[in-house]
Length: 281
Image (tube, rainbow, N blue to C red; front, side, top):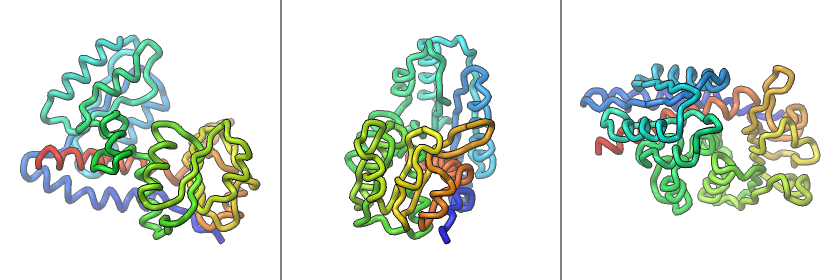
């Protein structure tokens, strides 16, 4: 029977480990603070931000929520980012995506100071990831690595297939697996013989953003399947992999919901604490 990889349990472990680190910083007057910029009234974004602020409260991180109007311009948002960059009390800056169409998302994200980029999206942090240098890592891929490590799932020497090539998940996920000595293949929507490529995987990471796109023909018996997908279909949340096939064929898998999602927020908290510790040092 396949092992269900419980992201909520691992999240709680990570948050419990962060709590004394936050207390130690607070004791010397350097309590971590996360600034979250939420634009407009996107219901999904509001839920995500509420969950992030709740996680801050759980470990003792101070949070600051800024809510510019949906009509905000790129220049106005850049000015807000500039103020947060200059504020020594702020250790982490998170701009909740997606941004309104009139805003240049690339300019805004690149304007965040790399040492406060707790999403790990800044080109400086992407370069450090590629070079294997210390830095803030994208939250979802680093959360997956924590999940694999804490469940003691071997990575070195294993064949890993990542389906998806986004800058947020797919590419950094592949780099982190490669750094852990996996042999990595990146697949995407234009990959020929996708099922054949996936079926070679000892570790299959689905991050393509299409509901239940991967099925029985994509999963090798005994593979570890990490489903990063979060798709809403007819009011229910589902991943990128057919859940029945995943549970039947894999040796271990992440459910949706309750798998990778909770880890993304946990690693955001971890990055915020890391940023605060780095500033203090």
